[in-house]
Image (cartoon, rainbow, N blue to C red; front, side):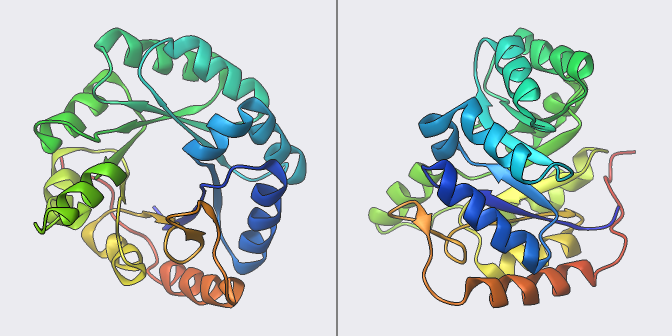
Length: 236
């Protein structure tokens, strides 16, 4: 598939989300993500505001669903989301409920393997249960806590090739990647490139970063899109 650039709108107000999204779209971003901070602060209203402003753009609602899967997915689909996120650590039945809601309401399901004891097995399970995409994710608290103890924090690239080889659906890698690392993920076989902190979002304040973000985003989008088609999945 052709690589996709997704911006994570990890802000806490609708207006800032829409303003940041407008800048990102001008720069060439393909998908918008209503990040978890925005979901918590604004809920369906944040997603609805993005849909009204960008009627034809894919919108990922980063729900991180753990329970009540059908209702959460239904609500976000009706607000205008095209993709919803469910956690691998959720019960199988919750994941199945999200997938059923996805089928009923025409949204794609992204399964997130954050905090799985075995990240590769977690990715396989998500695909086996019916997820359309796998998010290989090292968590914010995990990275920062381990680094604060003076240890090397895990990086999504550590196992990314193994994840890609284990599944046949598109993979996205997130969690503490540098800009250069994020741009490189298509070369690992993961075509969904997520941009957030530190380029576009201030990781500590959860607000739009300072500086000429639009020009930087434009250059990044051009570089990612230049990859051309990325083979998806290595699973036999």
